[in-house]
View (spheres, chains in turn purple, green):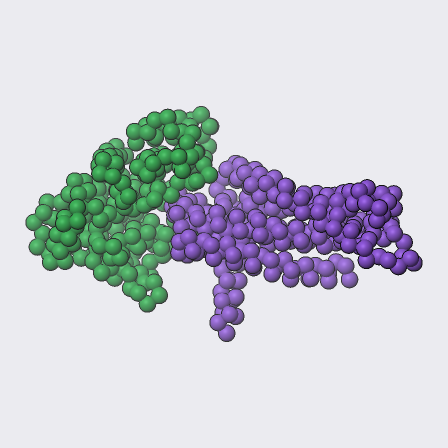
Length: 250
Length: 244
């Protein structure tokens, strides 16, 4: 009963919080500047981790598929096809979103939490500024712009990772790998993946902001908010992954 | 003038403010004093609208502020400058950007004019050549002065200070007191200072409100305070003077 009450309370407060986030800005230009800052902080600074993880995961998928594909009736190009579809359908959106929930989500929650306990959010309110809008809307817009780009980058890097395996091992030839990439290619999978990432970007930026914005207590409260931001974002990402897949692929 | 009329505020089961009444006059330094936990910070935050009061009224020059809609409150808030206990400077912005911030948000001035005004504000709190430093690169006393510069940059009609001397050495503390006096006269503001620094009370306080157990227990001038017979206030003053 207590859990249900808490979930309903947080859901209601989140809804009110989102209304404040979408309220009309006092003035547009400071918001543009904030969006640019957030693009750098949340997006550009995440390129490195996305590139590294995608490259290695693409390589590992190719290796694992080739080791498990011992049946002579199954053509070897399926390895390339498998790597491509694994990256397109699941890894570059859902897995990258889970990684971003950890990296960006905890960062957002701890940043806003620290602003709360050091009275910076109160200072904004006193000035007559809609603090939720000023602090969160630029983060949301930056995430909606940049996270899909990270998805595309991840797709490309994952496929390159698989290709590197094909040129450095004798498990599959580069030509067969590329043939696999070209076989049964469904462009709709990219659309599906990008739609998912847009939803995940919304979840990561707003859920993490929500927990950071309403921090109570000192450093312990900030730490707790940071953990909650990652946990709630991750669970919601998995839930919406299921819902969107059901809606778009079946 | 800022008026507080029969204000009540409760957090959970705890009655923090209990029928508080006070009048804070323009051009004077109005002090809210009291022991830690007496409710003075809650009172200050209720006056500026960071806490919504349960009952009672807060008026800014006759304009009711408490219980009003956010849009209406925003108009009054543009006339308020507040200095928080820790300064509450934005970490990601430089000193200059911090001071310019209210102007960036609410004026159509070009960059040059905003910059000039911000530097003028910094100079008026005796800060020079610190524009490009970040809050983490300046001392606590300087951070307080930057916060004051930010509070006065848009010519406020009401100035609030929450524990302006806390965490400062005596020299910086006196400097802040002098600034509060000078800025109050210069900008003719209603200045409300929440403090438990007793030397500041005797040095700068024009009107003093003593909060005890969430109620406005005593109010009067600095001269009244010297000869006060009120038992609780006397006890607070004696204890404060001993720890000075």
